[in-house]
Length: 102
Image 1 (cartoon, one colour):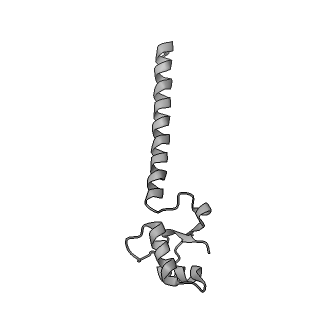
Image 2 (tube, rainbow, N blue to C red):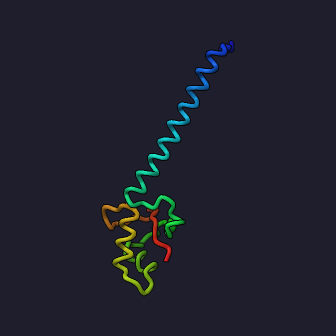
Image 3 (spheres, rainbow, N blue to C red):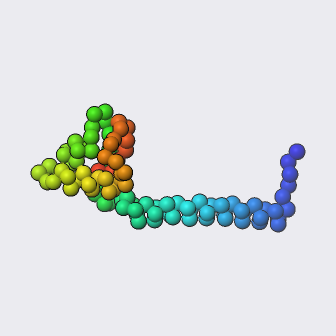
C-alpha cells in the first residue's frame, strides 16, 4: 500500500533532501580546505605533482632519485614527505604517493 504525501509533506521531504545535499557539499569543501592547509596539493596536477603507486622494492630514496635527476635527492625526498604528510620514510608496495613531476 503506497502512502500519499500532502503538499506540505512534499515540501518537508524536498527541504530535507536539499539540506542533506548542502551538508554533503559543505563537508567536501571543508575536507579540501583542510587538506590544502596541511600541505597536500589541493589540485595536484596544477601543482606539478603526479600520483604514483609504490612498486615492490621501491623506497622513498629510489623514488626521489628518479625525480631529482641532477638535483638534490634529499630535497626531493623531503618534498615527497611533506606533500604526503608521511610520518615515516617506510613505504609498502601499493602505497599511493604524490610525487613532484620534474
